[in-house]
Structures are given as C-alpha cells and as structure tokens.
Image (tube, rainbow, N blue to C red; front, top):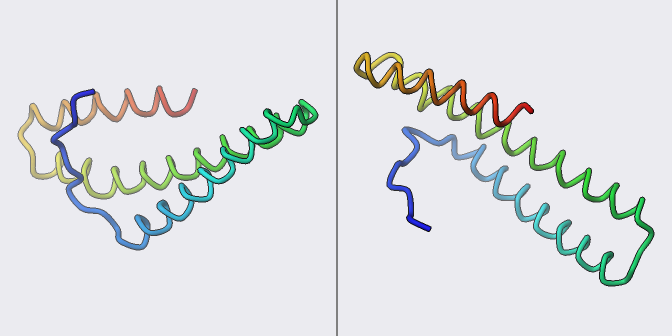
Length: 101
C-alpha cells in the first residue's frame, strides 16, 4: 500500500487525543470479539459487541469529519483556487456518500 502524502490543515489536539483513546478502546473490544468467537460464545452476544464497535467507529468518524470540515474543507473553500474548491466539494460529497450509507 502506497502511503498518502496529504496532511490535515489543522488538527484539534483535544479531539485527536479523544480519538486515540476511543480507537484504543475499540481495539480492545475487537480483541474481545475475537476471544468470544474462539470460545464459541452465543452468536447474539457477539453480534451485540460488533454493533457496539460499529457505533464507536461511527463516533470517531464523526469527529474526524468535524475536524475535516472545520479545517481542511474550510481552508480549501476559502483560500484555495477554484479548482481546489471544486475538488473539495467532490471529496465532501464522496465522503458523505460513503460514510452515511
């Protein structure tokens, strides 16, 4: 996989710390789900844990979207060229379509 060179225009440090904590918690939840599967736990219990992880990931995604809109998108729309603004609109539409399905 080729690494991306793009960086955020700005990152809210409190939001970044909160997201890192959430992601560590989610990582622990996923390890717990792996253990549940290995132990052949009741399917409905596993599915509930999966639902919790999905909801937690959606929370991280919302915070990332908030940061992207406040900083990256705002910068491109206000200070970028017309082509950069147009590209940002397309990117935002793409993100919303993928994120909210």
